[in-house]
Length: 525
Image 1 (cartoon, rainbow, N blue to C red):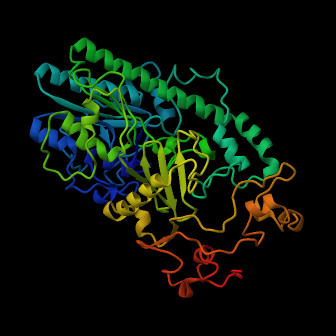
Image 2 (image 1 turned 60 degrees about the vertical axis):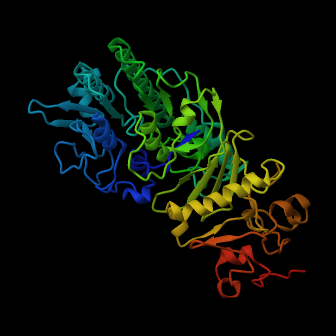
């Protein structure tokens, strides 16, 4: 149950190495540089434990430099001794160390020709693992403690991988995931903050569109290459584990495997990232430490990348790092004798992009998402592992106490951690409006459409006279007129229809829809 603080490369990387939320690092947007005064866990290990610290691979915290090799630029090392094989930006598929010691990167097509007979030495994934293992072996021979940070760019576009992985999955035919189909058919629809690739496909044409998409050569090739990239990483992890065993240092070496964000791979109709879904914001945290951590242990407590730095330092015996981390320490839970642990810890995930469109609070299987675009969404992954149903105000599914606990925690966290949505000039539904149309397809098999189609492509009178349509489309059908009992969030303040001074702000459509009676939008009788 581990998550990114923000499912975007730069902000999450900053939180991971610092234990601070992105706004406090300077790296709160993609390609922003991290402030030089940020203290990383590597720096603490170097200063307090005399660790030899090496970084190998993509950094993405030094602004716009591309590639920005560590030893060729004005680079502040943030506590890493060895940064020769660090590069700032880019997803280069091949790497070579030249005769003069300088690093050279290559795109896939160029490197594939140049390194045809020695691909396993120069493909980026292999190259970085080899340099990391060399760093470990050097320190083992010297009897020195080490931190080797391997930051592998893959799996990532451009989706190419070296032989034999490039053809390893050619026999597979990939289908679009279940949630892609539900999103396309709007059955149910996705949240409005998840604008997706099928949004504008007419419902009558969805089935044909999905069939063509699945048979599209680009889609099939991309998925096969993606799987190949993952398999290449898996094999290199096997190489690393074999080295640790052969070197006799496996038991007292900590391995932590994680990522900066997920890739949705068409889940919910989207590729790429920057959504609060588990397939985007959920990331692995697989930790191996035979000397102290029980094998097979499962932690169901929600944590995020901001919690890694304080936790790994405590696990390594650094009890006084002299840093005011914003993350929490989960090392005690790691070291406990419980095989499965689950605590009521609430953590926060949010959009750090230019749109600043959503923020989420997560506890155990629950996740509350608020946005400046849609009503609040409350997911329960035990009841709904696909994350397609909104259980907000569904007291028979999620207890009211859970919903209120998440709301209160998120409201307090937003200013404390400078979560962007809090400061955006947007009206946010903190509660669901009393009158609102469903975005799901109309409740009939006879017609493909949504509420906005009523009176346009679908006659309204014969529909809005039926109870199921009135319930589904109360605003369009003109059958609902009630002020909402909940609150709106605006520039850091919560207010109800009585408190917002709606007589001055009813010109804003969202307020008028939330408070139609107070805004004289209809007859309250």
